[in-house]
Length: 173
Image (cartoon, rainbow, N blue to C red; front, top):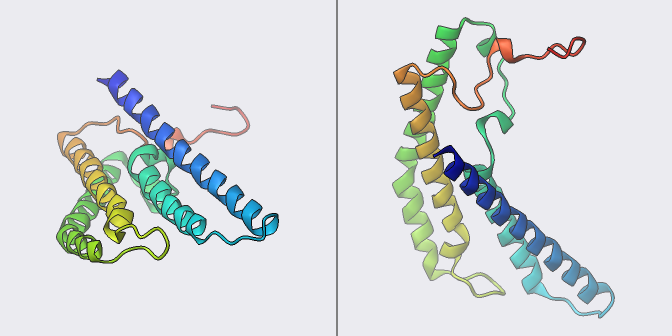
């Protein structure tokens, strides 16, 4: 199972890298067309913006691990492990509730955008913003799974920072 998850993670990283490469190539096309050919290509700007939106939400949904996020955890690290588990469970529950409650209204909004098209590519905006729905589903699943782990008492949660994980810079331990 771990091997399959690692392969999926590598595939997600590959998709993100491909989108980033495509955005960079489109950026170069825009520079060449504007400053060398004296021709403005509006579709490249729109494609870059769409790719950027997709890269951000794709990366957050599939590529980032919990340990990759910036945290303000002074209070979290100052309490004992059982209290940390309660903090983590409450935070995971709040995130799941917020995303579940906002899921249907967000879906309705994205679905509404199928009647509108982007300015130059003429692509339905529901396609552009559909990545946010994927992101929401993955966040609900990820934090729901974390919540189940907290309730079951699983101690080794991927990316969970604890006070004993801090490395001493002088000794390297």
